[in-house]
Amino acid sequence: MANQDDSFIREVNEELRSDQVRAFWRRFGRVLIAVAVLFVLGTIGKVGYEYWREREASAAGDKFLSALTQIREGDKDEGQKQLAALEQEGFGAYPVLARMRSASLLAEGGDAAGAVTAFSAIANDGSVPQAIRDAARLRAAYLLVDTGTYEQVAAEAEQLTNASSPMRHSAREVLGLSAYKAGDFARAKEWLEQVVNDAEAPRNLSNRAQMLLDLIAASGKAS
Image (cartoon, rainbow, N blue to C red; front, top):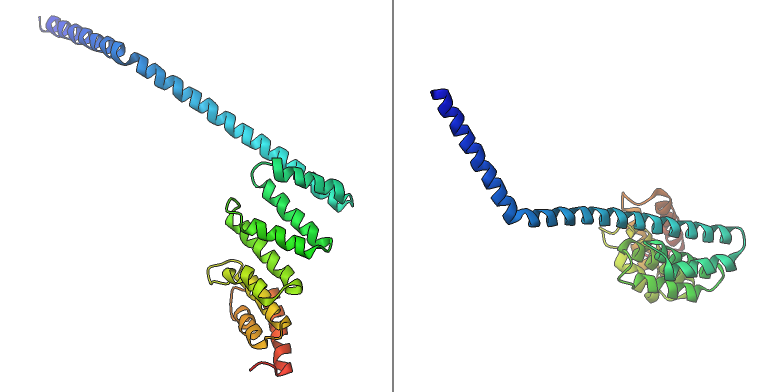
């Protein structure tokens, strides 16, 4: 008798659970289906977007390498055309890399003023990653050592000299060079000593700074 009662109770419980499931499904089934469909569509969209990004980045990379090859092999006109096209239509980091290379070509071609303008435009473009902006600013500063005043060099490089900047060593060097060229040996010594005294400064850069400090000391023009 007890077994019959247990069996009856189990059947009742199973029927109740079945009724609850059916009720739950009638109430929330459409919502669950909609959520499942959205999840599948979202996954498909994410995979499709990543594939598109990879394809576009790969295509832009191929065009960038092609432009560099053209330039290296002497066909600068065609290489510059490809770089200009990348600046307008490239994907990811390649447009700004194309801008950097185009600015370098101006400098290599003797148009220092045009190169400074191009590098400064990159440095002041808020849409460009900060590391590239800083590199462009430093390139402009080095060009200005020969073509501009100390004040112009300082306007580009001085903001890169703080202790947390990974480009502080080169920024201090370029300011020292500019000050030396301007005949301000005391200021040149100040910047160059910061390079030499920084244990994290690259050896070749520190050696160049020390050589210039030795020349300043030999001249007796700075205390």
